[in-house]
Image (cartoon, rainbow, N blue to C red; front, side):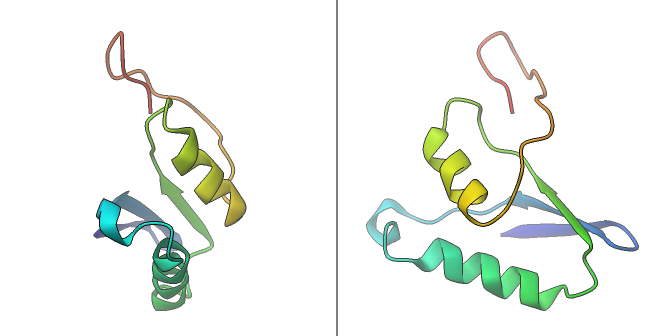
Length: 79
């Protein structure tokens, strides 16, 4: 897990990974709750997820995150 403070009240989740064997057990939601509790001064948070990974999109939207932009990395990859 890699979390960085970008400004006084803005944090960025650069990466988080849960191995396949541990997915669909509620761990992702628990981890995100722990992250949010660890940084109570965060008034905004940001992260990227691959544009074709709809499972990730659903997960973050379920937690209240909102898609605000796309960044083209290559002809095949957008975040």
